[in-house]
Image (cartoon, rainbow, N blue to C red):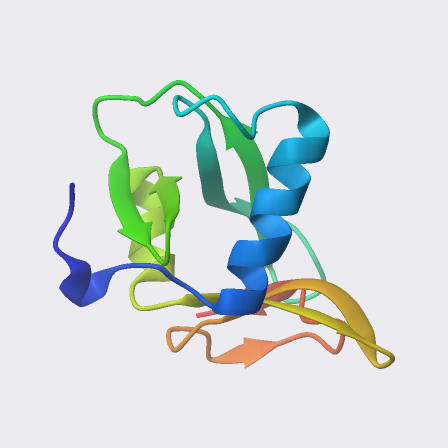
Length: 116
């Protein structure tokens, strides 16, 4: 487990939505499953966030636990995600997960991609 000083944080709203989605996917009662967060090339700003459920950790993965959610990211993605907060909005101006990333120098209008 990586130090929580640079961890990926999870808000209460994001925690509730992750737990709900894990239940719907049939993983809610399986402690081997976790939230995998990664950064991939693409999007209008150059880099995009990707989130999935997974149950296989790789030797170089960075592992965090915040707010009852186990978050795993590969080492390359972690370099872009240090101190990022995963949040969820169900408001009228946009629904879904979004990242508050202090490392992003700019983000696109939809919030799904960023640049450093």
